[in-house]
Length: 70
Image 1: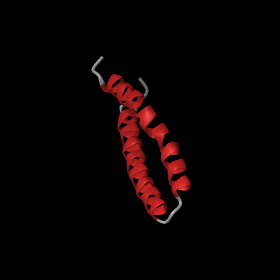
Image 2 (image 1 turned 30 degrees about the vertical axis):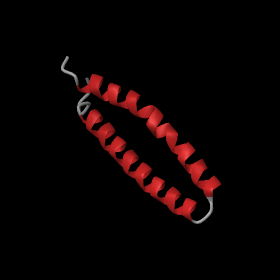
Image 3 (image 1 turned 30 degrees about the horizontal axis):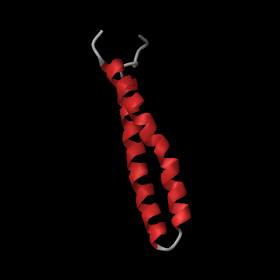
Image 4 (image 1 turned 60 degrees about the vertical axis):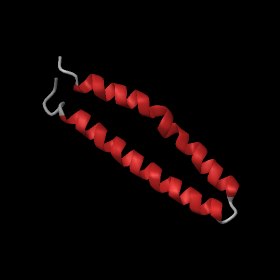
């Protein structure tokens, strides 16, 4: 492995953490929009956020493989 390659899993974990934080914030905004009679916009936002949920399992598995002892 290259020097500092052990930093890659930590970096990816932080990126995932940021992704979840952004997802939660955007979900709150979509709820706020929905309460103000823009149901269609809120649904579009939640639909777009599904990609985060769809990719989460792959990311977790990949991180587990990367951090497993060789």
